[in-house]
Length: 323
Image (cartoon, rainbow, N blue to C red; front, side, top):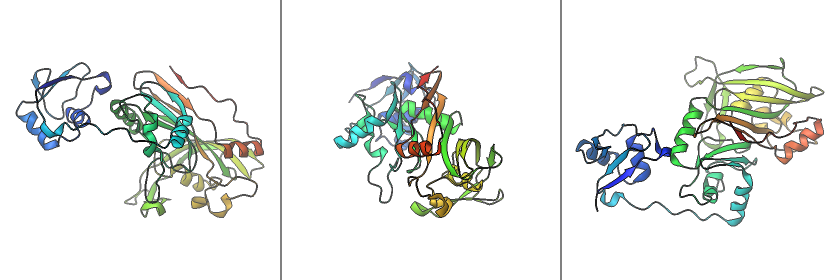
């Protein structure tokens, strides 16, 4: 094997040299990489480089012979044709860097105990001719519907994940809750903690000085209500804790319709569909290629029926746009 010179793409800009190597040569160990850097066998634009060196688009990386570390990337998984069609129907936005899905309620994003069918296991159906498999950059609860963002390349995944971590993404959820909150708008600033582990784990309200407590903030506005028995809430989480919106709504005294886990039997009402009435309606975020991307997702059938029965009018769906 001989020395290879590779050019850093725009998609790979600003990532660390060691992460760049993990993407290109996943079987190269960190220890081996450090040794190659230390001995000057790996270079960036002809200069010695540390594993933590940040790369820029257009730079040239010297890759020495790596032996067995250069194993071919795995082939795309075969997705059941029915599942592939369903995945394609979920797509509400697509460009060279980003995909957005409108996830139906009841479909898990990732696998776990007893979960064999999930979004992550079917992402190969959304390559659309790309050499890269789309990547998850955030999560939705299994029973929550709505917008789920995917990155189409590893570099874009890193940028989008950083946006979510840095709170650069504005998320709006719609929920139907039992009762009507008072006041009609405000901020829920209530720390949370996880109780237990696995599928049976619960998120609970916590005191600020508890060891396991993490801060959690949600802005809410009542968009409409029906005889004070059921209300349509717009929820804007400012933190991203597991089950945050469900616990915060319950803490207001207005649990989400169809959420007996956090609201008990009162969240099941005759004449309304079972299932969690919580929908990730809009996302607004920095697009990896510049500008701002705004997305919206149609309500699932069960929530549309509930809105119709209660006289709630969601209005026209905003078209996806990048500005």
